[in-house]
Image 1 (cartoon, rainbow, N blue to C red):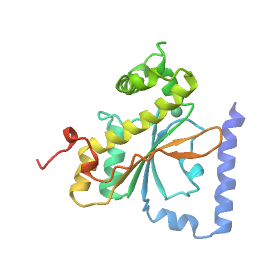
Image 2: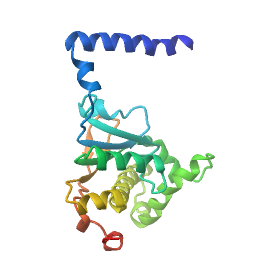
Image 3: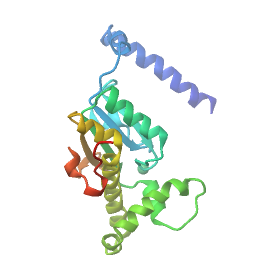
Length: 212
Ligand code: CO
């Protein structure tokens, strides 16, 4: 057990040495600051690493991850990340990336109690209820789960658009596009769900804030 833990530190030394060998300025450059163009809101699932699956390197993506890539309005962690990314880093794109086979989504489809996490998963149950007719009509349970993964991502993208952080950026004519993606664990390919929200008019009227 101790050995597998020590392995990470050994790997890190090897990695840092190799990076410096290829580019002696690598860490000097990175330590000067970051200027990422993207905020990634993804699942905590260990199989969905933002940089690796998008072919990006350190410094390119600002990342927030939680179970089932949720945008929960009372989540101070997510709101702080979003606020910093939009207002300070001025990212151009916010991407919510879900993944097929998401354990959180599958758990939310069932009725078993899991404990504390049920409070978190309840937000996904709300998405199910919103789209119950469509989902109940899908008889194959795997297909139904895949559809819920996609619908959940779409809802989270809309939830981003409901925040004052995003709406104020739009009002200040900041270019900020919201996207919904789903990653397929079985082939490594990302589906763009085509839910592109680029300004306040892309939001349902009831969520559109005017000035204070
Ligand atoms: Co997941």
